[in-house]
Length: 385
Image (tube, rainbow, N blue to C red; front, side):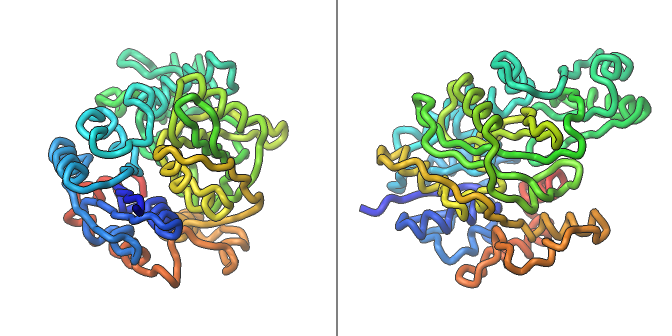
């Protein structure tokens, strides 16, 4: 019988990549999102397209809708693609596990991995190099943080992702203003020194089983990103970095992780040392590059959770991909046209553009219009894109 996979969060390019790869591998794929005009909903490959209440804005209604969906249909695996969706389901795991495979770690482990404070604490205790940092509390002052960490520094929300909520502070005035803003918010923050300025971002992606055995891994180098000072990559390349790869596995083993995650580093260009930044315990934005380089994480994750054995794939180095819509175009605008010649290189493959499956591009172009009435997508545009 053909395995049936339900992919959630169909708005994202990574979701489209998962839909396409699983369909090519012979799986029966369904997609779900809060809008029927999401990119994944317009792909040619899903056999079913399901709408649900927005997880960020109606979590209880979303969970009830999803529970009804998996209880009434014989799905083999559910793949949440976004952190908010993943954490909601993991926290209510008992409602779904009788009906479907959930290929991710327990809630407490996911929460530890996603929280920058907890992940940085674990990395430090494991002896992994990283920038100096400390939590921001209601009594923290600009003088205290500057004395401890120096300037410039960056303030990061503990549970932020995709560059959301980052505040860069280059002087005392900026730091004082930023503290006045964030100390009024319920979200926890940490202050962190800027490490390896002029260096490049590096992501080590790993699929790990319940015994913390590495089943697949892939490393990519960021060549461009948006926002320019820290956000999702818009151009990246498959590479290797032995120290970062070893550190990523050490850290994930320490927190007893299972499933897929991407561990982020910043590489100092002279010494080539990688400094740990954070863990993304879910599918990452550059997933299409990993698939193109020969590490098909969605298929491998489903094979693992359904008990199928496979050989660890060896990624092809040098493969390059871009996220033109909207990442690289926004990078072009933000940098006022000052980009490398590779921006105009037609041979660089794109995450989304496909003559065989053009529908997702239409969905991406319609996203700003859909956001006018979709609160979930509107919050994404306000904070990430």
